[in-house]
Length: 410
Image (cartoon, rainbow, N blue to C red; front, side):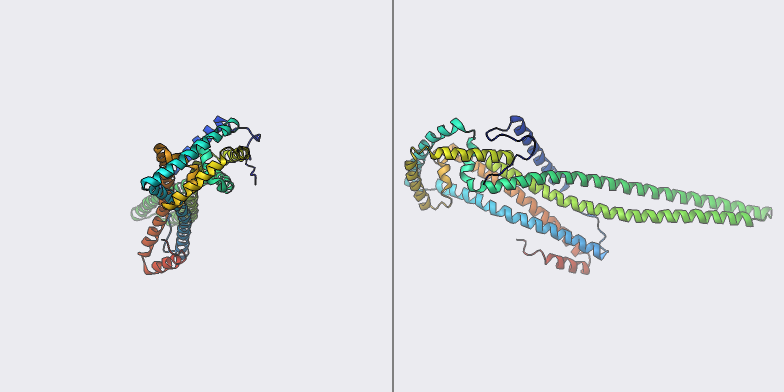
């Protein structure tokens, strides 16, 4: 099945290579996204906590349910990462078994691998005459050829999702900034009302003293001034109370909107981190920069394979040595034996084996970082629930009821 990946910009011809400018631009963008993910984790911990009135039962339960959803998303991500982590760890254990094999087994492995490498070098010379595929890309495609169509689709989805997530983050950050500005404006209006109230109280006090003096010393009739002053004070006080009530209602609505924006930002940030990690892992897996390059390289690889099929010199000898190598690897307990056919050079060159181990360790480190991040998200959500649980018995019942829907977190 052939995937059509040239979805943006000028459509490229079948054998046309991507330009260095496109490679460099995308590489810089991926590096910037990685740095932004690290910044999110460093500066904002795992997610921002919401300002929720726990005394309000519906608001409290809704907040607990949002925490539950975040935990379940982290749990799902951890399960996927652990599966791939187990595969990488299995490869590293196989390397250890090869290193610890007996001398006669090592020699037999070395001889078979050497013949495989020599015969493969003859065919590789033909490949490089017509097809532009780097050695890391070729090795990756040899090892994961069956996974490529599915991984191309995943890369496309991740890249499309990345654009949407970045747009959502910009919108949410803008909305939070606007709502915080609204809260500051409401607080300024409330401060102004308080100052007016104090000024009114001073004016009324002065007026009362003045009227009292007129009545006491000059026996002036103060009925009309007193009524006018009282009416004026009542009118101003009514206006102040109306405005203060309106400000309180606006503040409540604004805080509710801000909490919603914080919740959505938390979810988008978690998706952003996981999406960037997934992009880094898949592009590193195939030594490419994006889905378009992977599709191009994969099409070149398949065309080359059809050419290589016509170059059968040495194929029988390679297969014979391959079978011998598989038997020896099975004898020493190696689980993923087929991989070493395409990694035969690592079996005769210690520096190549070091590179293979280094690449596997890097892949495992990326998976561990993603696992640690999602575990941290789950831990912070559980800690937040635990804090709520300890406040009141009825809170504890709500937390237990919501946590019961999550299941086993191990």
